[in-house]
Image: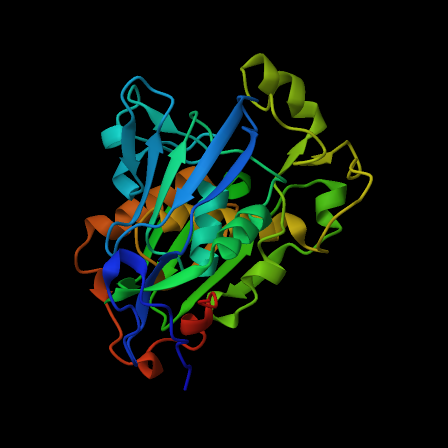
Length: 331
């Protein structure tokens, strides 16, 4: 049976070790990161802070005359072009935070439920283009077990969304599963991408997120760079944080981190996109050529159908999916 490790009696003045129960998690200490936004190219500082049980993950724009809190939820997503963006009440013209998917993916990989994030601009820094730096920062802050049961969204019936047809077809699906597995297939018709793995299935309970998924970087095509920058996008992108593809090959001198890095980054993104639900998922997610927009559509379709899901907790760790108590060690 998986065992929960005892955690100190410190956060919010409550005992946080509950024998047998699968508990919520936050971080133990404040930690910070500074970097450039991949699209805006502006220097931004992040400050990560512990947050109480059932608070969820919330960003707070500290650069505004009056700081604005923006909770992470499917309803606060206001834009899915090029990245996942949230805003106050989901209004397009309200204060926003862009490119949240890599950070949220790291939170999911570490099993974090509650986190307060102060941000000094409107775009989460890209750092190295993957989730690995966020994993390192958050793990270094320590993981704290909390005095509340971890709440999951368990999918009860299949939900699917589709877009296009024939050569333009894209789709994504959620199905019932006792655990959290993601299966993704890509098709880019590019020699360098075609030479790598096109389909990956990853089990979040395997304990291999940090090793197998977190280091997969975002990627783009050199032919699109000029058009993107003319629209004010990609201004912070470089070969230090993006895999750049020329006409026939990867242009980065250090090559790829994984033999299937492209499709693994799509899984990394999908984990972050689905984490905006505000709770970890129990489902098998399957997708073909999906992206931020389709992932958010899928999540909204699920949450709009109260018969398609339920919120569950596990009073005994032994009843939870294998490995879920060890998503991140508590120390």
